[in-house]
Length: 342
Image 1 (tube, rainbow, N blue to C red):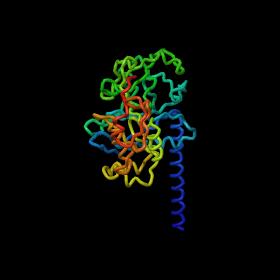
Image 2: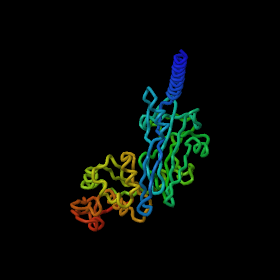
Image 3: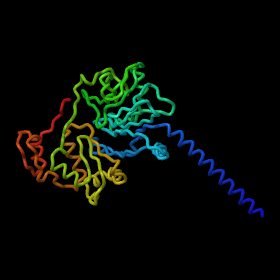
Image 4: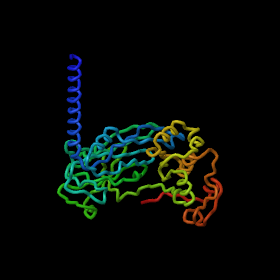
């Protein structure tokens, strides 16, 4: 009889605990449902500097607690891009969470049109900045509202224009931010002429009083993926090469033969665990083209001639003629890369 009473009490306690946990989850869900726009906070969880600091292998992962918060939502919110962009020194990702706003900018990933330079309770808008100087990875987090107020309290932050790359001006790296003066109205891209564009200095973490429209932005254009034969080669091996990085879709069966696997087993381990969230980024070097070539060689078996039967189109050759090449030496002899001025 006593055992039955203990069993009944135990079942009651389990039921009470279950109801309590359920109540907490429902409260959390209702609280989180207030937020209708998210940029999932994404951070570097593992990395390795390689090739004498000319490159870095990284794995980006969204924060576990943010993933859990989004997962409990019944109604799908609006999402923005986390960035994950690279310069030659800095790596950047974005994070944001906003409640419902009166209007959304449809041409800017539905980013909310803000009437504030302070976040409402529970809101945030952050920039994660990773500094690779000295082959160390130092992180700082910029509060977009705070740096806007520090620049000028009479402005609201509107949006950050850097979606795919970091701006390089006179050897320094920046993001471009649009600011809206209090009282000015903007509903979509047609009203953006009213916005003030300024630069965020990634070294100091401050908005500087420089108009980016009056600056010459240095943008290295290596453009290997624009050559059809290279583009097909990369696609056949399930990765994408840009002027800044290599990004993997999936891994094939020959990764154990990669040069990367022999030279940098930690980098190989990083990529093998999470190929879709892993990148190899180019950093500062004396020869940007050679660094791109060396980066690509890492993801092929050692000794692979990636230049065999590559056609350099006339538009990409130094002499304006088309060339069918067979070696790296020929490629460097004829291929024209340039730093375009925007």
